[in-house]
Length: 155
Picture (cartoon, helix red, strand yellow):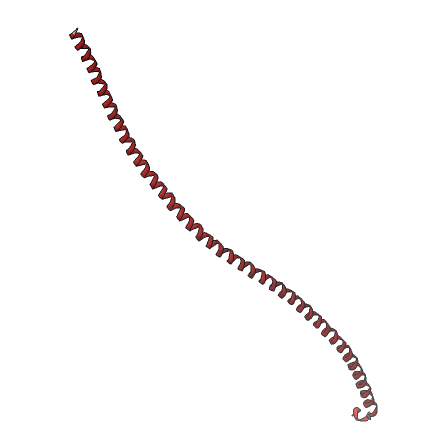
């Protein structure tokens, strides 16, 4: 029975030894897995921090660009407003100039028409005067011819 008992103790010892060995190996595998997971986590954490920093940098850059474009857009809008005001003023002045030119042209046409009518009236009066002068000259000529002795013309 002593040998059976030793056999049983030996068997139990072997099983305990194997269990401890398995437990140690499991603990080592667990430690290795934890180290690998920690290394992976550290690497992913580092990559994540890099990505976060890059996103922050991009956001700051984008914010600056938006601010600059906002200033540029504001300047552009002011320039467009000034240009529109200038165009409106030029159009208004152009309309006024066109209207003024049209009125001036109409006044000029009216003046020319009045001068033409006055000239025709003067020509008609002078034509009448010329006709009267011609008739008077004709009468004077006839009188001169009648008063002049004809003998002198015959010679």
